[in-house]
Length: 149
Image (cartoon, rainbow, N blue to C red):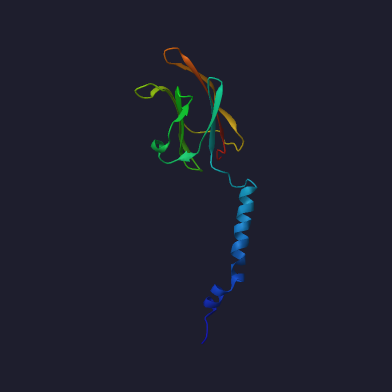
């Protein structure tokens, strides 16, 4: 019984060595920062002396992003719509928690172009929102990083 050369390559693990070396080189290339990671929006949301760290990565469907509970009084939602290569827009939502339902108290929308940067860059500045019967304060600030050029 004779075997074809293609059959012999399938059984010989050494023929996969170039593929493995290529994958290792790609991993090294990516870790060296030559290929940028996906953009990341990092927000700090402070209420009653407690700060919550919230991160948002690019998504295709903004409706799948859920708001984060902030101290039982507020909710905060950061949405970045797009891909690793292009951010279509960023929206930030702040809600006051009420007995019936959350009430939107602030929405901000940011459109491209976004400054290209691998390091975290200040994005929103510091926002102070006041809501509710006793005007409770919610403080938010966000940084954007990994924006492709």
